[in-house]
Image (cartoon, rainbow, N blue to C red; front, top):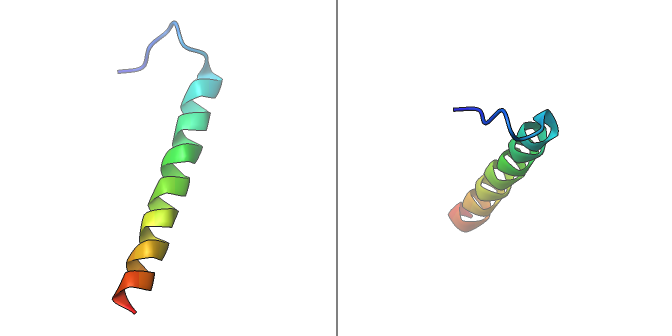
Amino acid sequence: MADPRKPVRDTRTRNRVFLVTVVAAILVGFWLAR
């Protein structure tokens, strides 16, 4: 699924964005559950 045309740095950036999105979703979930 990895695209050899894209640099490796793209994968690391995408993982960081995904992690931030997951953390934000969890924080919003806790805030709404309160």
